[in-house]
Length: 211
Image (cartoon, rainbow, N blue to C red):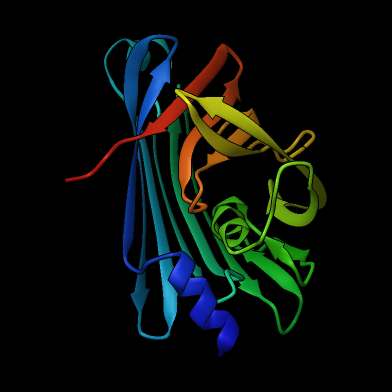
């Protein structure tokens, strides 16, 4: 119970984070992350939407829902993806007792006991005591694969503020529709920025202050 108390001191429940998506100097859309408690488990929701010129270049309208336990081990993952002309709905049940991830098309994949999908991994990282120069080794489940990924941690300064830059080395696994994901955590281990490499360049997401 001590671990759980520390976990939710770091991450207030419920919590909403909103990010302005930027492509170069232009505002291109919005990402919303929300975590809430429902009964004894937790639900992470994320929406990603482009707007304006960006929608004309490459439209994104994605929604994710992930149910996790108190250690951010995923229980159920579901997404609805619309990116460019591509559409997909995916549902994954994480059966940790049997050690399998069950997809809605009845595809079963052996599941590593410590594997998390990308959203539960982002939140789980917030519970760790990390510093610049560390290298994490974490298990990622994505793209019908389990992979042990190397995650170097560095410092990055924006506008005079220092952030921890966490850059998962995901190989050929796509994350948020692209590769080259870097997350920037502030001094309270709250995500302040993202950068995501896409086939046509890089987009950034900067957290907005909510009233």
